[in-house]
Image (cartoon, rainbow, N blue to C red; front, side, top):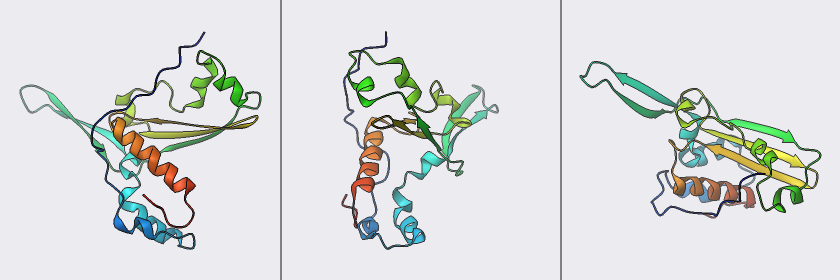
Length: 167
């Protein structure tokens, strides 16, 4: 049997990612991709496209290391998958998490420190018989809980908007 469904929780900290710029509201459907990118550039979570960088400081007496986000545009992972025999009810109805659920999240089993070579953000869209499941994995070294919700809310706002984005 799977694990019991965990309760939702939140953190009460200030977001560590930048807020949308003022010109974010000026995005229109007829803008060119270049214009849209210029509007979004300050707020598209570009640090999540990088990798972790670990530097060893062997010259000091304590052999310390430092870790930082290297904004090198190494990219995020996007996966499109199909579960042709799974329905939304198969996921939502059980009291315990069905084992198949783990396969709906990319980079399953990747540890935070592996962000030196693995993406800091991965998104997977899985087509079900009667719906879709969007799962994502985000490295906790790069964002905290509040920043994760900021990312989710920003993404949702972009997806549901028509014309100008209202954030």
